[in-house]
Image 1: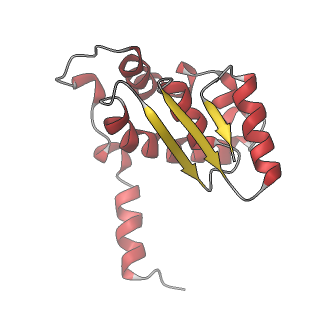
Image 2: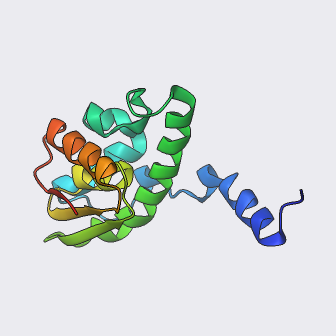
Length: 145
């Protein structure tokens, strides 16, 4: 089965993730908040800069290979969201729709503690996992719906 043209474009873009990701160690604006430092550390050090419970590739929630791939997807999403979130120093409410076990929402909550993160999903079992992971990671800025 052939991949449609739109799919080919997506595959090409995703294969260049490292080229498309901004070089955060060359950021021209001054890092004047703890959230900025956390975000930059995450982009340099990866999940090792965060509580273990936040890492989907830790082998607890996902098999090792799948966890590593999920980690790359999460880094890509966090890079996109982080550029906006770290500039709004006073925070606000961020909703992770269809957030499941909290893979994206928990990373954002750990990186940006000034934001209240709501993980919303229809699956109560997934939300229970997200709530436990948030609690185990010591994240007090996370709610599940």
